[in-house]
Amino acid sequence: MAATSADLGPPSSSARQAWLIWGVAVITYLAAVFHRGTLGVAGPLAIERFEVGPAALSAFTVLQVGVYAAMQIPTGLLVDRFGSRRVLTAAVLLLGCGQLLFALATSYPMGLLARGVLGVGDALTWVSILRLVATRFSARQYALVATLSAALGALGGVAATFPLTALLGALGWTWTFLLVGGITAAYAAVTAGVVRDVPGTTSRGEDAGEILRKVRSAWAIPGTRLAFWAHFGTMFVPNALSLLWGYPYLVEGVGVPPATASVVLSLLIIGQVAGGPLIGALIGRFPACRMPIVLGYLTGNGLAWLVLLSFARPPLAVVCAAFLVFAMGGPVSSIAFALVRDYNPISQVGTATGIANVGGHSATALSVLSVGLVLELVGGYRVALLALVAFLLLSAFRTAVWWRRTRAAVLTAQDRGDPVPVLVRRRRWDLAESEPAPVA
Image (tube, rainbow, N blue to C red; front, top):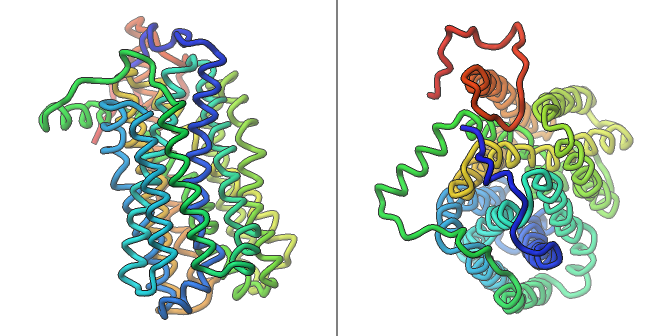
């Protein structure tokens, strides 16, 4: 279950080429995050344009994020088979076309179709970038470059807050989304011309049986399962708030003016941009602190909700502090991909990364839908947001379960004298040596 020495070796390509390719690829992720978050401030306009209520509005985000989650394992297989260059080029074209369709959509079904196309394009970006990082940079650099990628990509979320609000006010719905969609589609020429895969890192064509065995092999590794639940728990709260419910909660639930709400919402992104490199550098140098950071974040997230929801209308300073805590979920979620990188062979990293990435995005889709349903049935954001707390408690429990099981597998490997990515010292709360570490 440990990475091989070849997997942990230095990258074969030149540093300059690696950073250039990475930079071009990260811009595609920035575009994906921007398009993913456009409904965060355009939601009220969408309600008027498509004449729908909160539950139907949430369906836009649920569909887009649901498609994203469903596409993660296929995306991992596609990237392992065809490489990041081809998949990223397809992603940018789909993002651009989806947003162009959304610009022209006047009916609810056409709007849903457009968000579905955006979801497919979005789904192809992150796993492709992580595979580039895994093949172009050393294992020691991986955590830092991966979290830096997430932090820079998050700038797309900043662009989807008050800059997009200003653009919508100046140009209106149709011309705004036509402009950003056209620019995105044109960027496909750049990715096709600059991005290159390391020769020999793509796999041959596989039949259905081989694909199924590859997915099962990745899922059977306790470290992959731990990565899934860590990603599930750390990512969905900032996603659910920035993609849809944060803005209306601030305006309608807290009573914040719309312009101020856009700025407060941007704290979710600014915190991620600032926190990403710090988390990456920390876990790159001290990999043993990865899971304490995850569990610490989950605890802090729960305490922030406890304080925030204790107020009928919380003070703005309390809201800002809570949003900054939530923002760290993005950087912390990158720990899941470091776990995948450590515990899977390089030929399986794309597939395993896709599995882990399903975690946070499936949690986002389910939590966004749950908030919308509770809001429509019961009313009031204070009650509706308890749905996020319920998902947080579930994820904390499952993360703790799989941390123990992963530690048991690592301890067993250590006892055999096998090399492991991170040495583990046995604790009293570890599974007993005679107790099996189930994988179900």
